Length: 169
Image (tube, rainbow, N blue to C red; front, side, top):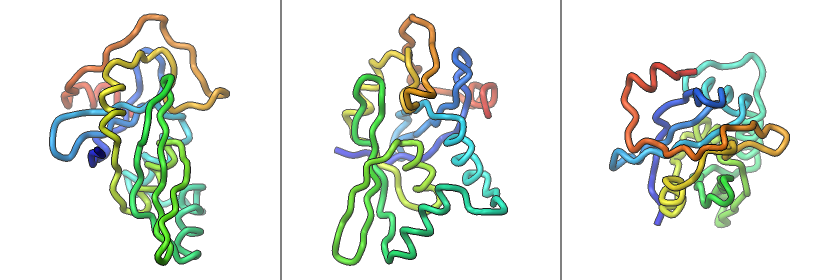
């Protein structure tokens, strides 16, 4: 089953100084943290703040190409979490065809914001993330991988506004 989520905020992981996108279930208080790269976090933050760059950024370009080809982004789905790596797909509609593009969650989220489409997360991802150890950046490529403390970190069930403000980007 897939759960619709919205972006609750962007913050910095204080132990690793790495950006995190916080997704929140639209029907409950369930949160899902996804560690992302700095460039992707910046692309997400610009769109959240509705700051228009002088020239199109990569995610703007992708949105423009999709639209010029007569397609539209239906939704994005964060499909799985394996070995501390999140996986996502971008679901496109082109005429009568549905197309699924493999994507990093951070890129899919940046595109979803620009396309004003919903973000869904597979329920298993949420269940698996609760027991996941934050030893490695979940959404980072190998070249961006950041060493973290060896100790497993349990993600809190709730983040209050004071936590969000303390670690905001």
